[in-house]
Image (tube, rainbow, N blue to C red; front, side, top):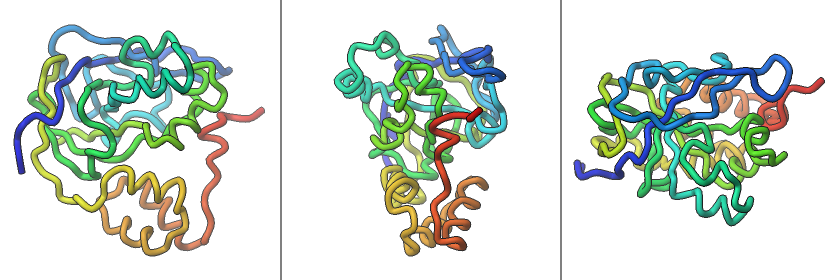
Length: 232
């Protein structure tokens, strides 16, 4: 396995949880770049917060990586939105140029600055992205496009800052790049062979339950609440 840099960190970003767009909701999706080195712990970056810990943050969603490579395409699709002028539009903690979902597999282990991280899952977008952009179907667009970014769990704590390398160290599941997982999650949702194959992966508990339920029930779960937000 080559240890040459897969990408260079453009920005490291954190956010504070504040009242959000709908009654009772809080969010830290508005991330801002941080100067200098930042501590990387098992719960994420020092100073970073989450508005709803039931669905954001925690060891399996410690760090969100989003490719800056996608911004030009988004500007073509939604216009010159002010959020797309700087990193952080998608609530990411790590912004890079040079690698996208097609270059990443579930379970990849990488050196991020001095920390050791592992790709734990792809990001499943929610309604807060739509509200942030003021585009009613933005979350679904992100989901359908496959340009969603991914999450890391932290295996060894360290520090990271802009200019650091992202280096691939190990790829135990080379047959499972993130686009293959996205295809299973959102398109070939009841492909039983693919579901069984995916269940052999080191999935996070919520994903394992989801795929097991699809096999047992022969039905795909509703995405309405996640993409559209709470009703009533």
